Length: 278
Image (cartoon, rainbow, N blue to C red; front, top):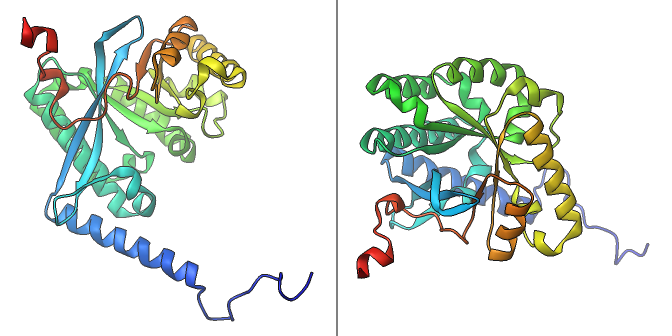
């Protein structure tokens, strides 16, 4: 290797420009999140999860966390969650998302809603307090609340997640395993977790109607879920062709832009076009 192709290493004690830029970007993101939480500049955006064989009927809605910067611009969770998910800020975001979700459930008695959380929040006093407070307002809310835990998060502390799920399921709360297939699930935990719903990760759904590899993998995930009596949701469905294939292999529900983008305008309250013009 010539000296012109050898990697240039930072001198000991000095940070590379790339690392410095990444650190600065992370610090900026953390400051933005902290400021948004301080001033409660946050909202939920709701996306329908439709019944596969009756796609005009929503089985439930997922509430996605959105923060707003000081200019009022919406910042999706994907833009900040990586910087904060292992810190207390991540727990505070989970708390706020849960509080807003419970408030929406209290306002809309017919609504069924899923809210995302990290398994790390199970042991966070503020999050547990928010959950108990919401359930005290109306114990029936628990039967309309779905808590989504990512596969990777659940695997971090499976014993804690298992005990928590058993306690909450006795109070009517359902649990969804998010991003199923994306991580390294120990399948023995599936029968111990007793998730009610598994959401098949979008990487297996995109172009599934013409991708034999994704077809085999998705069918295997559906088969596993069915064996453990778990309801299946396919994520990131974007075309009619994908939806048709997923219906054919027995997926229970579909979620994605083909059926509706996340919206802050309470999509279950919108009047269908045919009614507007009828």
